[in-house]
Length: 243
Image (tube, rainbow, N blue to C red; front, side, top):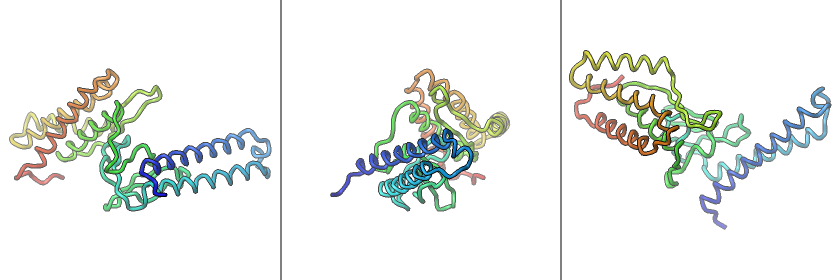
């Protein structure tokens, strides 16, 4: 019987849960068992470990059935500066084969990528506050890259389940300082780019506040503005080389 993509995704998700549950039970036993604590042979520990290994193989099979090696996926996880199209390389051994290893032709990789952070091109984009902030921050990151700057940006929930935007503060400060200087002293296209960068950084700095205020419309507006600006910069017929 041919399985739908939704069925394959659900089976992969179920296999992941089973593997993580088996691992938790095994580690819980090892922490509480007197034999295991004293590094003595324990039949129960051995049997639980076999269960973990069996579950992890099933997880690997299920994930690869849903997203086979070399298939294209869209990454939309917390590392928003890496959003976009990737290839599936394999599953990750260090996560007991419950996550993906993604790659690009330039040898760039992202490891330990959860199923929830990738989608196939035909799947609907995730929505909600976290997804909206990730999309907006990704567009800002793309605009900065088009203007010649790379700022690693991470969007995820904090310990209180609030959406938080994080980035390398020293790099952020350096980019902002250079852009403000160029906006004051440069002319033409350089001054225009500097103004775009300053505005983009201000939007990124304000993103956490907007998320906690529930300002979804403002967040989407920021995304759309950054996208239009990036496309305008990239489309310049006489744009200077960016390094």
